Image 1 (tube, rainbow, N blue to C red):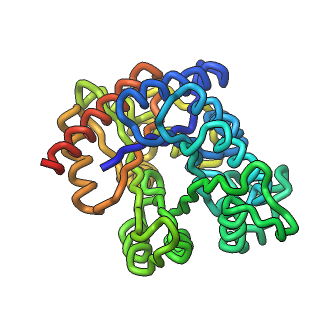
Image 2 (cartoon, one colour):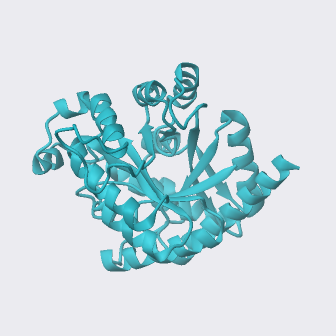
Length: 333
């Protein structure tokens, strides 16, 4: 089973965006050496703790710093962009870096009402999501001299599309077009099982994709001791809590007692949202990943984890890669 990595280029408290982007480049290089199949970046706006707003720009940077690993968007929020502009950007990336570029598409705006207004986005754009996915498939397909508008670069590049989602809607769109599907189980796991079932049951084979391909997103907080891993996780717990309060900021430093920071009722909600996670020692992380894979039967796993300390984050993803490598070897034996 292939395992991939989702990065938001987190900006920790006490640090800055320039450092976050340098850390992203180092993580990408090491991830390729650890066997990660894809390195995806996600579009978010007006978030001081996330530096991946200009997603296509960072994809090019990561592709230049790596050699064979696939690099892409997990994802581009399609209502924020005209399909032609997306096709030209990712067609350019594919022209520069060959068959290494992925384009995951989301239906959400990646920000609040103020962000939508600043981007000039209308709510109705989200309702045209299937039509715009269809248009992107056309724009990346063979050049059509009779078409009134084509993507240059873009036409003929065949950039592979993924549909991202946290509800049944994305599963239905992915199934309709015969596209691979990535479920946002790392922060919205409530509809995970039902969405996977809908996607697989209604999948319509398409050119180049005879069978459904579902990706499971899992948070990973791995360290040499369980206590340290749990402490690393408190940064993401705090960030999620602050986001729910409408107070996004830089990635918080970890704390020894999360219950002193997040009230009990809110803690339960945060932990439910982050329930698709593997946390602990290398052995514990491997066991938890194995259990999640056995339960949900994904075709691929994408790992993520917002950790304050860069060195600890590198080590967490290294441990996770070692665990996934062992799981894959054992499954093939």
